[in-house]
Amino acid sequence: MIIYAKDDVVKISGAMNRNYWLAIKAAANLLLKENPHGIIIDCADLTTTTRDGIHTLLDALRYIKQVDARILVCNVPENLLVQIKKMPGLRSGLAIANSLEEARVSLRPSTVHETVDRHAVLVLLMDGTDVPNVVSIASDLARQISVAVTLFYCIEVPRSQPLGALLPNLETKAYQMVRQAEREAARLRQPYTTHITRSRDLAKGFLAGIVEHESRLAVIGVTPEMFSSPRVAQTVATLIRRAPCDILVVRSPLSSAFLTENCSRRIPLINRRSQQRPAGNRTGFFAAWPLRPGCRWWPACLEDDKQRLSILFALSGNGGTGAGLRFACRYARTHKAQLTVITIVEVPMSLPVDAPDVPGLAVANTIMDAAERIAFEENSHINTEVIASRNTATALLEIMSRGGYNLMIMETNDTTIEPGTLDTENYVSYLMRRLPHPLWLLRTKEYAKGLPS
Image 1 (cartoon, rainbow, N blue to C red):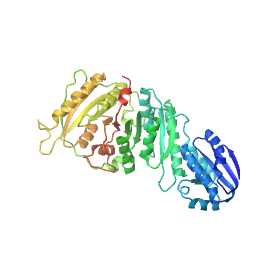
Image 2 (cartoon, rainbow, N blue to C red):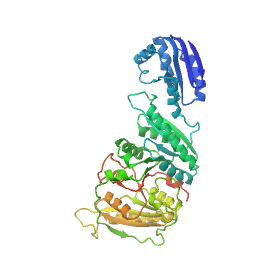
Image 3 (spheres, rainbow, N blue to C red):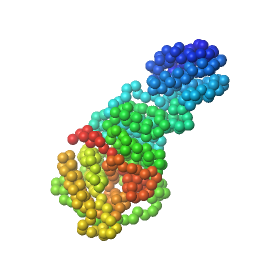
Image 4 (cartoon, one colour):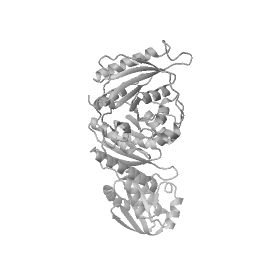
């Protein structure tokens, strides 16, 4: 058998009547130095193949998996294809292309930067992501702690196919989305690297990428249309529960078509009673926001530079960890935005909403005291407010609509996000699907400590 190696192709010809892997391995190692993403074995000129010869491909597949690369076999003769299908471990793991050109197209999107940027802000991309939106926000956060961003795309491979199988449609989508993200990062003059990987499960692929890159913060962008998919909602929930770093879920504002189709029911208004808390010299203020052209999460109503950014930070009933509020304070201070911090006290049906002694009111006041202390430590000006309502979800929805806020930030810890639900008891899922405004869902760990003071 004759072995010929050039570029990313190992071409074998003649009779493969025994295991030639040791001979091919030397050529493959040379090619992998120049092509760490994978190599191609061209079998166009093979004449005969025996069962012992088939073990050449089986050993090649095992070796390539050890070095975390891909191997594609192209131009496979019919007699060899029949024997591959009979070989356990080979028929389910070997990716076969019809031609050399098809194999090279499949390897192209898997190109990664040779150096992995540790501790970078990881931008998790998937089909449907609003790329300019999430890249713009991730770049903004990365600049504040002087790190690069890593544009990370995970191709979810069906379990019915080998992990390295040719998936032309999915590979093309991945390549196009990563290139779009690269153009956006270049436009913002943000240093970046890219990484495209494969996994059986989208969430597990993202988690593996977070561990590999040792990221401090991962940003994932979703739209309400995407979040309606159980697969996307489950991926977000898994990242919130299991990610070893901070997670920021950036949910874009509702499109007009989605709003008309899915939110046609009138939201019941709350019979709200607001308790305005004196904040002394820590009152909110307005200042100009540096608008960025092309930042698509930015509401159209704020294109006039006379408008201001107003952020609503919703505290949970237990007050959260405090890191989320510190993040919101520093982000608002950096961009000279107004920040309002609220907490909702749910009133049972047995009491009127404006009852003087609502259960949980004392706890809410304690939470607001802690929030004001955090704001004072962060040298930030905030407004604090306690809202009494029958339901947290509908209360937050009305406050955002009537309060003139442009962005909502919420901190969550191990929150279960139920896919496809409209149940207002799970207010995170409810707001992710129905809030017309941009919504950031923050699962914090240590990221807030890294922002500039």
